[in-house]
Image 1 (cartoon, rainbow, N blue to C red):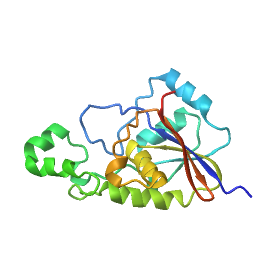
Image 2: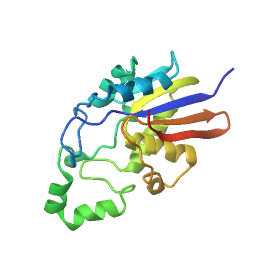
Image 3: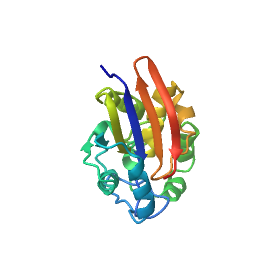
Image 4: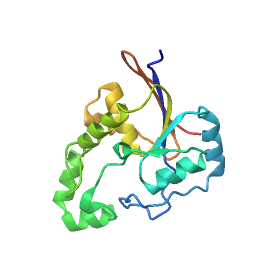
Length: 189
């Protein structure tokens, strides 16, 4: 019996919207890089179990990759609460030191009405427990991929935030019977 799960973690395509904004779940994907999408699609295993977060940009990216992905809220991006939809510059000007204090310990702090990265890790861990053995393609967010890396590598949450996870990048992690194996992080198509 195969108990190994091979995770193919894909960060969604870039957001089709203004820069410097904490985008909400309805922000659309910019699917204009057809070459990158085709190259990424060619690397994915055929017939794999596919999951995406409920966010519009992950659903659109999964569809562009030819995946029929089930939505799973355990893999959504960190909830930034009242800050969602706002520009970082505006928040810094309005909140001053309070906004800066959040970013001094972003793994543990929660924005007003939101969740911390630690909360996101716990949620992702619950989602991972539901995945079947075999190949699983997850079209998700940079924070979700960092959360899975924190779990796989047993990292302190703040250390996992150091990973760069670019749009349309592939991170490969295997869940083995007795631990984890990290195959690749942030590979470009």
